Image (tube, rainbow, N blue to C red):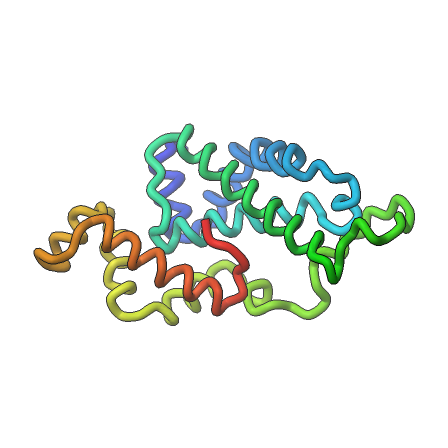
Length: 194
């Protein structure tokens, strides 16, 4: 499968394309997570597989919502590394916060059991990928849904700005759209934005 076809199929929610993405870029993302997850105390509470799944899901979610412009395999690799880095940083901040600082606890053994996933599902984890995208779109304001539709049709930010009127610049349209996505991500409990 060619690079462009892979991205188009991922945008459409194709599960085979998601498997292809993991086959092609999974090792790179896992390496980045292992490299960033250096503190051995974090290994007791943060599962590498949880962070991997979170990073890949975040990428697919953002791609389906038109948040990412990826033009080459090298750009995709860089973006996936950055998302993985942010996932590790977010987990590190969470687990090193004073109220649950893993540095204050003794090692309870070489258990491979992870405590990162809560027993109570968050709104984002309770939804499947397709449901998450649908819920995100439903919560977007009408103007952002229109921008999303144009992005899914393959329009760039400059073309969208032209359609929105003479007062709109490509950068302003992109920022407004990203802010709308970030607001919905916060509502859904998605902890950071890429």
